[in-house]
Structures are given as structure tokens and as C-alpha cells.
Length: 58
Length: 201
Image 1 (cartoon, rainbow over the protein chains, first blue to last red):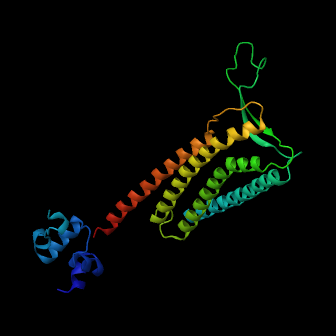
Image 2 (image 1 turned 180 degrees about the horizontal axis):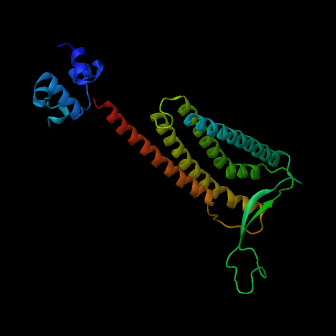
Image 3 (image 1 turned 90 degrees about the vertical axis):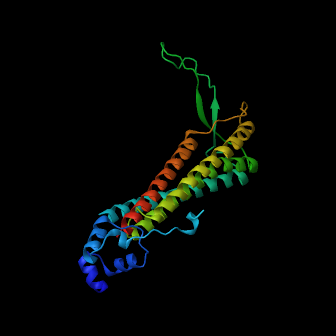
């Protein structure tokens, strides 16, 4: 599935999809997350991952 | 609609700014006249006189407990020191008003050309600057006035005091400055929230 097809299914722009893909998004709506999971047939845990940043590692 | 309202307000404040400039120039010219020419028949230097005799002025069932009057004192002949002290008593206040008006006019002009009208980071910055101008300017005007007025009074009046309390305008200026700073902080925090909402995908 291309980014354009996914953006149509999730109803967000390709630009925003790209921001999400590259990990530059500040926040995501539950509705967007649900549509993403629906389109990709996965769970939120498959899309989200927590990484400790250097300033939190103390 | 909003833009038209801002344009009208901007025009009105620009007019006030021009009038304030003219007033400042007039006061400067008048101060120069006091310094170098003298004001034999001109307007005097405004001073406050406390404990004015008021016998017989109160109604039968009332008592006057204190009386303060504004007097205009003329100095015959050139008086550079009087002019300097008079300058110290009005210049900080007038400068504060001019700077404050200039900041507001600039903020409105920038707001008219921006996408988000008044609710922007530029407006918050202008408001913060306006708040500090009002607070510092009013404090400076009050302090210099408290120094200049007793010396002027001792030079021009037979009876003078060591301390002349700052006028209500000084207090009003400081309070307004604090209020403007608070509004600036509200706009800034509102913008942070708006940015977070807009950045949510």
C-alpha cells in the first residue's frame, strides 16, 4: 500500500502521514490512531514505541 | 470585520500619538522658555500645596479635614534650574505615554497584516514590552517627580515639604502595566495550547 492510498484510508494528508512515519509528530488523535490500526490491521502497540531520551536517562 | 475594527482603532490611536507628540513638543518649548526667556505672563509651573486654609468653606454640618490644591507658579526671568526640575517632573511621564502609544500602534499595525490578527506571538511580545514600559516608566516618573517636586517647591514657594506623594496616575500606570503583562502571559500560554492542538494529527 502506498502512502497516498493509506492517507486516503486514514483521511489525513500525505504530509501529516509522513510526519507520523518519521516520528516528528507532537501528538496523535485517538481517531487517527484507530483509523491507522484499521487500515493496517494492527494494534496501537505495533505503531507506537517508547524510547528514553538522553535527558530522561538520569 | 475584525480587520476594519482594528484599522479604526489603529487610526484613533495614531491620532492620539500625534497629539501626544505635539503636547510633548509644546511642553519642551515651554520648558526652554522658562530656562532662557522667563515666563512673566505665561503659564506657571504646576505645584501642589497642602493644608490650604479652608475656614468657612464647609457646610454647617460638615468639616473639611484636609485640603490640597494645584497652583501655577510663575518665575520672573530666566531660570535654567527651575526648567530642569520642571523637565524632570513631566518628561518621564510623557515619554512613557509616548512609548506606550507607539508600542500599541505598532502592535495593531502588525496585527492587521498577520494571519491571526491579535492572537499571535508578535502581539504577546508587544504586550510584554508595553507592560514593562508602563511599569518602569511609571516608577521612573514617580521617583523623579518625588525628587524634583520638593526642590521646585522649595525654590518657588514660601512653604514647602520634603515629601510629595506620587500622583494617582503613577499608581494607575504601574497597575495597568502589571495587567498588560498578565494579558501578555495569557496570550502566550493560549498560543502554546493552540499550537499543541494544531500540531495534533
